[in-house]
Image (cartoon, rainbow, N blue to C red; front, side, top):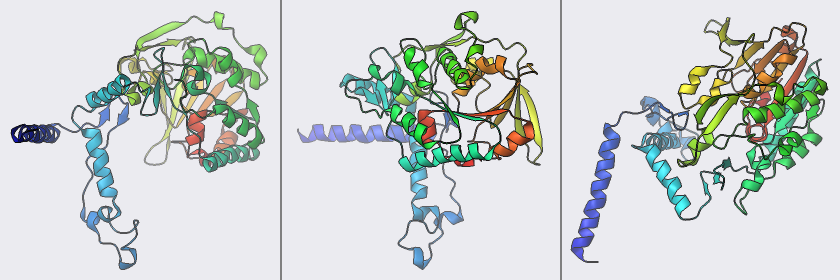
Amino acid sequence: MNKNYARFLSALFCGLLAVLFTANALTPDKEFSQVENRALAQRPHITGDTFQLPPLSGLFTSNQGGDFFTGKLMSDYETYVIDQFVLRDTWVAAKAYAEMLIGKKENNNVYFCEDGSLITRFDAPDEKRLERNFNSVSKFAASVDVPVYFGLIPTQASVWADKLPAGAPNYDQNLVLEAAGKAVTGTTQLDLATNLNGHKDEAIFYRTDHHWTSLGAYYGYVSVMEGLGRGDEVIPLEDYAKTTVSTEFYGTVFSSSGVRWVKPDEMDTYVPADGLKLITVSTNASGLEERTERPFYDESYLEVKDKYSMFLGGQQPLGVVYTGNTDKPKLLLVRDSYSDSLVPFLTPHFSEIHLMDLRYYKTSASEYIAKNGIDAALVLYSVPNFTSDTNLVFLR
């Protein structure tokens, strides 16, 4: 390589850096990524406390002094630069495409499957956290005077394991189900795996999202009703009229994978919203309870990236579905987002379905049961969400 060519490459590299630096400086920061469906990091605030010197006793530790001395400032700034990098979505997609071209079958812990499915890898759970979560469910069951049911939903990585690339590392979710059967006490445990595995050749999960489809939720509903001892009340699938509400759904796994070449999913509903009322319960700044009526199916979400939030309007600390079936029992459902598409199928069988999300709702569930005349409680999570959840300690 001659000197002129070397100088040209150096100048080209420096010019590229200058262009990227200028573009990043001139591009306004974004607060939210529609593609990734998450809030983006903002520029860290620097105050006088940021550079507060640590005490002499803390000079050689990482937990003393201001953010500059603990390393938090640099960590936050690095996250901010990555999130706000110009053309971020394009770079993420280019990386995924490059991984595919060199023969790799995974990007950002998402496997590329031959049928176009994107499946998030499931890693071995933290045993201590899993034990704490099992104990939290057992203690909750012992603290209430109503029957408590407990179920874990296996996901694509388990039910569709035969779609994964050959030799792909993937922890067996059945081991978590077996551990739950031994560790959780005081509950009736539901078997959702059998029905889902029995219908694994059907479109029971989205190909671009981690949730089950409405069809998968129907089979989950069958398992729930059987576990509640009410299997004879199950409404046959053929009695429902399927309505396709979107043919352009790209879910969270699509976003995190960087893959942009797969077809979108369809979204369907089976249960009409007639006669169903959803009330969101929240607490205002004065500590007073506020109740807001919301659409049972919020079709405004069909116009944005986060289409799955059409079911029950997405995340909420506490919601109550009133079905009009006043002669039916009341159910408390302690849940993750998989229940959003499950609840419609449960509505014929309960007068009220109380939906509690422990990520946002920290008040005692046992007190809530007594106060609201709940007849039964169901703790229902997907396996990955249950094994990684840090909020089940609030189930008390």
